[in-house]
Image (cartoon, rainbow, N blue to C red; front, side):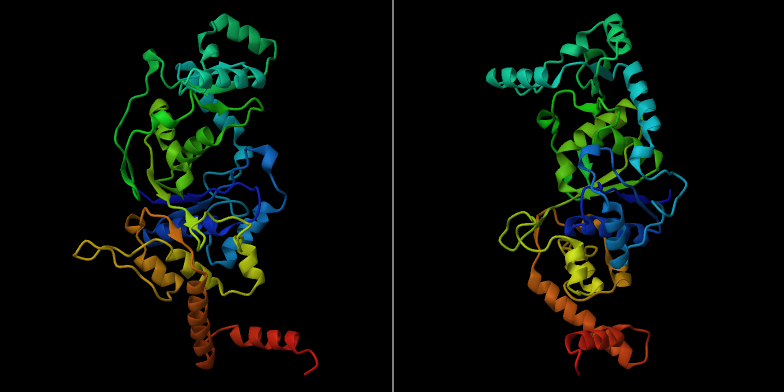
Length: 369
């Protein structure tokens, strides 16, 4: 089977360092295993779209030397690669879930849902919805649909006649065997919104299956949703892919990266003239080791490496599950090493734009000399 991975950002702003690392790890996995790297745009949350985001993402990937095989502008056998252009597919899968009793229509208004959550919280219940609409008759549902009442489609997790088969424990390539996390999930999560766009949960499962994705490599923030996604695969009688969740990147003070604490957008590093190879090298070393030696302890790379060297040595299963601090000093050192390599190559007559870039910089800095 051909290894297929995907980077699936939402076009809600500029590409940031965490997103670039996720794309990089997917790219390294695909290239090391002779697979396919797909770029998919997850634009189903129409309220958060930012114009120009897709172009910014693609520009950042190409600046970093990360080239996708299938995706926007390039096409491929499993397109379209914008989720907003795949709605008929999500509706077909939703219909299947409704027909098998794995999902149901919910007509509760936002104010009703808020009141229900508050009532359940006062009762010290872990539930987030009382499943009122699950008990509507087929006739009541048909009447409400015909009348055009706004509604969502919820996943029927716990119905006794349609219980989702469990395959515990769930295994993650980074975090290993996981404890059952169903208790932290919302009650009967929404799969299809009232605007007929899917939530991330349904869209990602459907697309990863339809695009024949074999390895889902994504951020740690989705780890808590993994039980739900595994249940969706089981309910649709689909084989799930391998999952690997990437630990968060942290600021030097141990806090989560944010725009208020330094540069987090890739465009910041492009504008300031950092070598793309150094930034890629820096992110690649943020939490991974090469394949384990005979001692069983992963060899932790630390120095400057080219993209080809990263591809050769990278192993997603050697990634630490601990969150990693991004040290700006390490980037500075790597940048110096990559610059030295480029200068040496130019000195030896090898193709390099480093001398031209240096000349342009000098002319810009000293225009009168």
